[in-house]
Length: 237
Image (cartoon, rainbow, N blue to C red; front, top):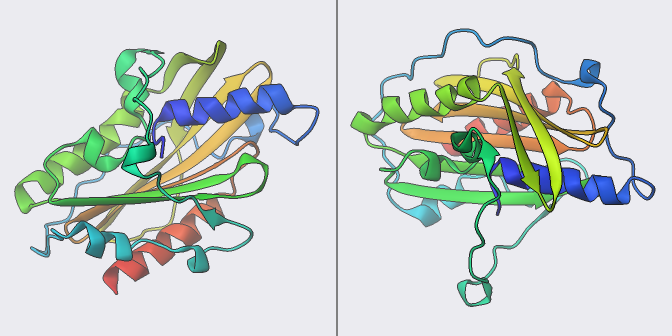
């Protein structure tokens, strides 16, 4: 899956082209699910020592299609033999902000195992979940780095398929989940259309999980909270 802010940009570009066909979000900033400036970052809880080293086991702990509400279907990963050459990512300004929403293991290396899954729903809505399990020494630094990224990228810009996109991040209030957690909202605005991504980062033992709900409309924070809670329960088994 394309798990970075350019994936968000691609959906905005699609909305620009299909504004007369499907209902895409408006640019009314009052509709943003974000709750304003970021507070202090959360400290990771001590690791339990239960480092998952088998990607298949970690993948089995992620939410499945049967765990989701509504008409969401899993997007099957492409076979390696079918993968085209990876294109150069469209640049963002600042460049580092292009990593926002990318899979955890890509943002912070050193995980013992990583897994991801993507679901597609109606009207360009998507749910992206990825997880990475870290040894104790890397767990805290990874959790800190992931929280620092949206705080550094409160405002940046990019271009996708010739369409300029303005990005903004803001804090997002969420109920406690897992051993430690944080959340933020990303809005991508282009040509009068706005796409929102509500994102939660949660620690479950030595595993960090990122849940992203993206839609060309307002994302109900309660949907993200429910998905995150369900994901925590499944990982805890």
